[in-house]
Length: 213
Image (cartoon, rainbow, N blue to C red; front, side, top):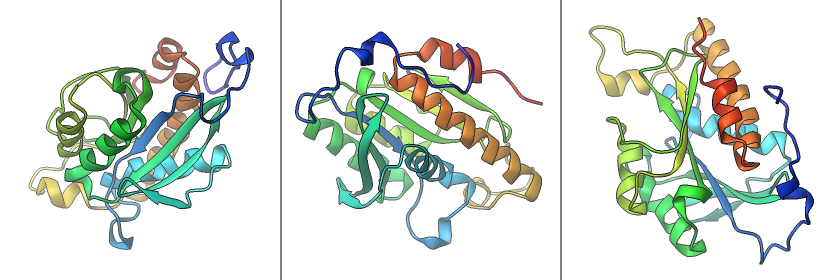
């Protein structure tokens, strides 16, 4: 496996199922709606969904489950991209509604992308389960989905500087250097999504869970 390259495995070579027969893989990026929050640290999940949509030519032109959505395929797998419009702390209301509507198993059919203040910009971590770790968006998803067992990509936005209020920090925008690093992490996340959806989670973790300087 070469990091950053998507492969088509035997799993997808068998045949492309019809839309009705294909399980829906739900990929949700977390953030806050309205222009005032665009490009803030807290909205890097939204930025990543936009980058995935661009990479796979998916139109984000549908509104359902209180989210801006787009449907398409990644490597033959039917996917739904979601940007919940419920505001960060209520993200689970949107994602839980989609999971229950499609009767999907969160452990195998849900991937959530969001900001992490414990990681420096440019870094990301892929996990298959875990607690909310103080992130209110994840706490809401766990409450509405009913499990901690779902895949997530955490993208570093940097540690809160001393003296800053946490809410003010995550709702602030990146500096020039940090913005460049964050954009690199978003590109890595897009590549990782292709691998994860193809069932290559271990390879994706080996490629992208390495700390960058």
